[in-house]
Structure formats: C-alpha cells, structure tokens
Amino acid sequence: MIRKKSQPAPRSLGQTLATVVSLGALALIGGAHWLGAGKPSDDPAARAPLASRMAWSHAANGAGIVPHSVAGMQRQFTLAGYHLDDIRQGVTAVPRLYVARLPLDMPGLDDADQRKAVFIKALLPLILAVDEAAAVDRSRLIVLAAREQRGEPLRAVERDWLAALARRYGGRVDNPADLLARVDIVPPSLALAQAAEETGWGTSRVVLQHNALFGQQVWNANGREASIRAFDHLGTSVAAYIQNLNAHPAYAAFRASRAALRAAGQPLDSDLLARTLHRYSERRADYIADLRRIIRSNSLVEFDRARLSLRSAESS
Image (cartoon, rainbow, N blue to C red; front, top):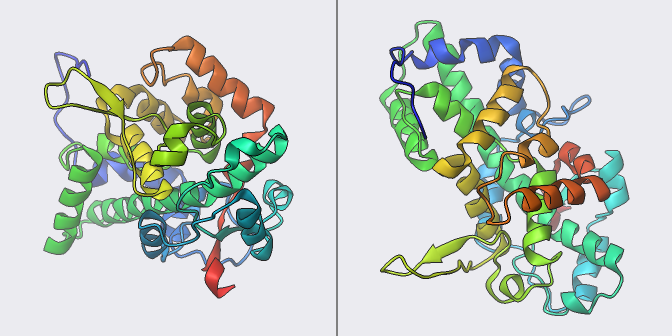
C-alpha cells in the first residue's frame, strides 16, 4: 500500500472513532445486545447477538450437519423451517443450521434454480455467523473508543484485547482508523456471489472434496507453485475468506470503500464493493463483471437483510 510522504500524527482511538460514534455507531453498540424487540436493523452488524462467538465456534468446528445427499440436506432445511422466500421477504430469521460439507451429489441437480437455492441455504448461515463475530468485535471496538473519548482509562485486559484484535486483523492499535476499517462484515450477497463463481454453485471438485469455496491458494515451500487451499469444514473456508478481505494488503481498496460507506451512513453496497476486487482473480475486470451479474441476476442483495435466529436449530 502506497503511503503519502507526509502523514499526520496518529490520533487516539477515541479521537479517530468519535465521528463514527456520533453518526450512528451507537446503534452498533446497542446492536450487540439486541434481543429481537421491535424491527431489526437492515445491517447485520447492528444486530449481532452476544452468543455469536459461541455460534461461530460451532460453525467453524464443523458442528451441524454432514449431509450424505442433497435430498437429506433439504429434509434438514425443511425440518428447520428454512425457506428462502421467507428469508428474502424478511418474514423469518435464518436457522443456525451449519452444513459442514456439501453432499457429493450436488452436480447431479439438473435444475439450475434448485441447485442455486440449495447452495445459498447451505452457505448463508455460515456467512452470517462469521459476520456476527466481526460485528461483535466492531461493536466492542467502538465501545472502547467511546469510553476513551470520555476520558475513561482502559483496563489492562481491554488493552490486551485491542492488541489481539489488531494482530488478528493485520492492523495496529496506534492506527485505529485502519483497524476499524478492517473489523467489519462482508455483505452476504458478495460472499455468496464469489462462492458461486468459484465453485460453479457448489459443483466443483475443490469444494466437494476440499471444502474450498473461494479459490484461495497456498504456495509450496519455494514459493513457485500454488495449489487450492483445503479446509476441514465449509465454515473454516468462509472464515478464511472474510479474514482475507479484512486483512490482506491486496484488498485495501475494498476496505477503504466499505469504510467510506460506513462514514457516509450508507448500507454496504455489494455491487460497489465488488468493483474493488480487481486483484482477487487474474481475470480482473471480467471476474468483477461476473460477480456483479451474479449478484444482480439472482437478487442476492435481498440476503443482506437476513439475520440468524436467536436459537440454534437444535433447540428450535
């Protein structure tokens, strides 16, 4: 990332984030304690339940269902009352039903619309769970900023938490504006579009055999050969993807665009954010055009309003 020759002195966490708080970030703070009363915000970051860390732990560790067939997975969805039309209309919340891996007979679904629906149902709870965890981190970051702005010293455990947060997101505690830009959600519509593009809506060998949803690569010891990164579960693939967008230097433009939308009080626009991902694929402009087409033609933006249910699918 290119830096200007002259840079202002680092501002305190409170100074940098005070404007964010005044522009409505207090809704984010309250969102971490949302218990379902009244109409929920359209922004997932404004309604992350306190149990999101536990929920994400279950998703990342593969807790949930390991379907042996598409039919079996669909039965699980039906039993959980999981219907995409209801989700699109905001009638019901998304059940906390985490799919560990896609069934091997996904390519046998000849009906494209049915294949897309099954794929979205499998991924959406995982994406929302990772976004919840990021929203909780963001909410706490803003809370600490507000406390510092009031002149309240942070406790040692809170300073340690900030340091760990900065390490996890590839930021620095002494550059709070950059840290806040990193600690945020990825719109579900964008995540779904990238997963669909990278896996052929869940039919590729790499996702069926290696749970690789987003085409992330690993390099061999000499750095000359790359291969697709394999994951134990779909949840870990989703987490690695969102971590990648939030931390890797290649996606600084993505984070800057997202931060600008936040500062303007605007919802996260997946079409706009997709245009910043020119470094995600060697196909560059063609890749971005495909993402935008997938988002638009499948009305994926409707899932940006989705929320996870307050209870696990097992306890429903």
